[in-house]
Image (cartoon, rainbow, N blue to C red):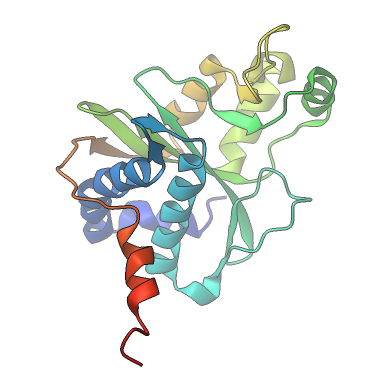
Length: 213
């Protein structure tokens, strides 16, 4: 059964706004999270806040719960009380989408043995200068694919001796999820725009606020 997230994909005005504004917002997130030309890990948190802000814009702040306990590791937000996970990936190939972040090989194995899909997924595929997408993968779709292919094929563990920092959804499993007829997609053309951004200006302005008091 689909949750209220499906309404995003039935709102033509909002769909057009997502197509138009999301690349700009994600580019701004990259600029804000960069130092010496390199994008920092914190960009993921900024992207997540952008998607949560979209939910608040669409459904109202009272219906979007953002203070999620750390005991719910995959849940990033709750919409009308229903949990959802927000995931982003960059590039043409569907891979690298994390289920859990950990560098501990034993914890990764324990996670695989106990994991079962438990919330909807919002997935954003960022593909600069090309086509990507904004996806909704319902919980029921995840459960069906998981049961069909099994946890060994659904979950990709980190290779021994590497440091990929997490357990991922297998590429083939992810393709099955997004291609399911009950999943939804908004196609996005990821074009960059010129952004004039100064990471210190806001803070300098705040320091100046009481100069005339």
